Image (cartoon, rainbow, N blue to C red; front, side, top):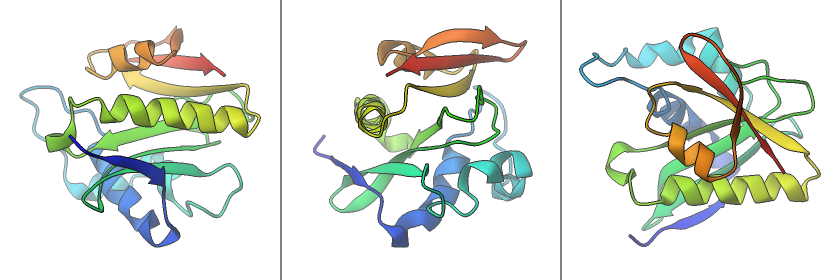
Length: 157
């Protein structure tokens, strides 16, 4: 598949609402939640006022100039928060674009970008039964903590 990865444009920030919804892991056989779930404060922390803070970073993947995926980071008190100097990741692709290596390439590019900005590490949380867990391991994340449902992972840059 022919795709491009680039920095998000300011007029595309609103797309993060779609991508935070797409980032919600829905196990097989479970009914997806309504779109209104993105208004939940636990999810708003990922997207509210995105671009207004110096630690907000986002790359998007495009196919034929259509944005089909996003990976973004910010220092926030989210599920993967480990400290106030470590950006947390969010990533998602529209379903029809998954499985082509696009997410892996977006993760690698974002990790490299964060390294050039001087960050020492990045974090994320992932549900234990989420298929993306292996991708996170493959791009350098390691499990540092867990609870009943999720792993907290860190990549050292």
